Length: 266
Length: 282
Image 1 (cartoon, rainbow over the protein chains, first blue to last red):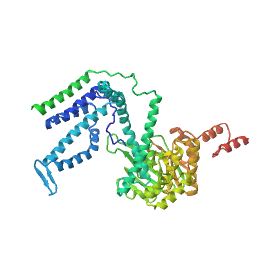
Image 2 (image 1 turned 90 degrees about the horizontal axis):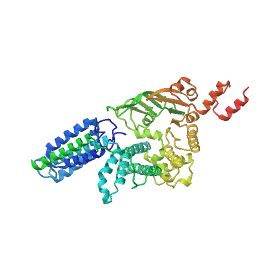
Image 3 (image 1 turned 180 degrees about the vertical axis):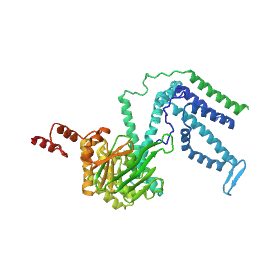
Image 4 (image 1 turned 90 degrees about the vertical axis):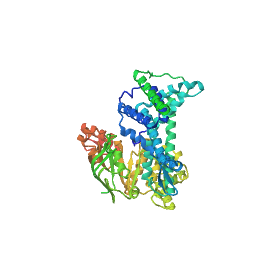
């Protein structure tokens, strides 16, 4: 089961992969802010083009990016329903008496869907090109300033990296348990409500039990290797900014500036 | 033949640039009532093959006949549930499939899914639990609080309670201590000998294969490279050299003795008997 790509790291060799994780995280934040500016279609087109160029530089196939969109479809459909029910402006497209569909509802949904797609593109680009360990390190540095307010940055970074690391494992485990229950006659696709609930229970309970077991084993392995939360740690890998990192940061701020101009000045 | 693979291929991620041919034109017939071992390296296609036996994967090409079901690639297949009742698949680390509050409920889950009434299912569950050596005192206990070996017995009972005529075992002894492993295998021996179940055993462990299997199928790179009687398999020198097959200890010992000039030791499977023959040898 390698169909779910969200949160995965793709070990390729590209300039993007070699960038400093701190720079990538900051650039991601700046880009996310840019996506949330009401910059209109021109802004989004520019952002999309820039992201596509970055994807190409990172040697990532677009089919991969496309696959990470799929889980989002349910959300878009849900949004569409809400929008159809709430937006009553624009041109009347469809009138079923009890239900009226206006053009603005479709437009608004499309607008939000584009935003979501861009957001997912930005975040998956980060996870595709950054090793989980580097990502954690980067998060820790970026959160660094908040330590003085009592934020346990190291622990947060560790939690995030462990969560990311275990997504594929848990998916694999899920597939395995689903297969064993199918063999015992569970039908995950069809059946009455009661049967469906039973099918889900037969999946969830073993999954939880496995997850707790894994968590326990992981905790033991970490302790055995001397991990103490909150303790001062030294690092083998030292982060260093290079020329490319500054280009990335400058580029992302440039995009933000452009979007702001598009949104508020013009 | 209860199971027949015909030119069966399976491709993971078909149509994608990283498509992977896990099985390549498999032609194989597995006989009824015997124990067939499927051996091969990690990634040779063993697991893919057995998932086909339960229609968890459907062939990309070719066809597969299991009892009176025929699964043909790219055709709509119905009645998969009936097939799954007849072929019991015991997964590797099958204890992870346990989920009910009590053991008896968990074991009767399978038969109930296949349409048995509550009483029938419980009856079958009791029978299956007896077969794996768990008595009445276990019925009301939680399956999640047992030891690893006991959990696996409950999981296997869960499959046996469905009363399949073919039982597929994927590394049934992995992670068990030697005593637990040999007890486990004797359960399957009983099922084969006394209940005439057809058994397919997938394993890395050639000791297990030698002790237990009648036929051996060797998979490599998604292709069937050999299908021989167990004794013939472990004496086929070219096969052993080509695929670096680790010989069972007793076969290795026999070969060494043979080199030293001892004769008439062929097909001696028991260590005691081997020692006697060597002592008596003139």
